[in-house]
Length: 313
Image (cartoon, rainbow, N blue to C red; front, side, top):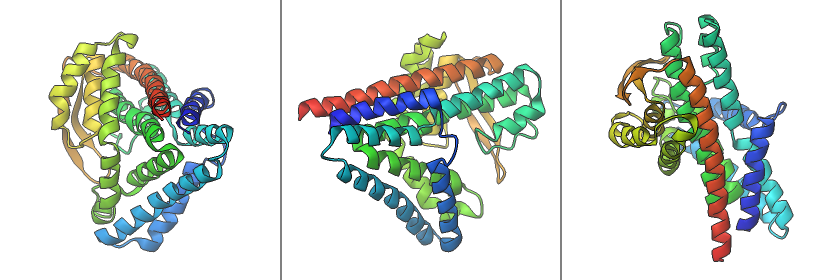
């Protein structure tokens, strides 16, 4: 089973790199619409309905994955194919790189209004007052965080738990993106979804940071500075996970990240990550390339882990 899983993970990662997201009828978008309907039905300004909401949708995704693996358990070919399809559906590496590249082009052209609009494709920050350097910094931070959330984490959960792990992780991460904010509406209802996402990303975010340090020289970055910034600065970040990979990216690219960050519901003063100059458009491009390399390394590591488990059996 794990050998088929390893093959499926590699095929799915390759499909994401070559094809990007499904062009029509994306299953994650369909899940999001279903989760929105569930929110309308279950929403109360209280934690308990939020727990029910999170368990219902994450558990449902895991249950679907378990059913798929039971149906295909007698056929290694079907196991590999179903794992590949699930991996392709849940990964976001190619789309992340595309959105980051679009951002770099807009910044190169000096189109700040276009860049402010484009930033909404990467994160939920208020970009209305950001200048070119602020937009570049926000992009690098978002690319770093999403490299962990949308690439490394699903691959690792796929290696550990197969199709159920892939689908459950993507469901939990999607719910966090929808309701996991500290805004007045979601502070209580979204608490369970946010905490579950934090828990599921504890290990992957640190693996992503480690891979970032290892891969930094491929894009002309510094492995030593990446390791140093990660170990020194990550713990100061308010997120237990985002700070890990953002600090590693800052050190790898030898730039400073962090500072004042404005969202629709609040403004935060984030700690400074890394040292040196402020991020610019060139760092956006290098950040995108670093994300690609880290994603490829994560795919190889996930497949190797699944294959090792198969050999041990």
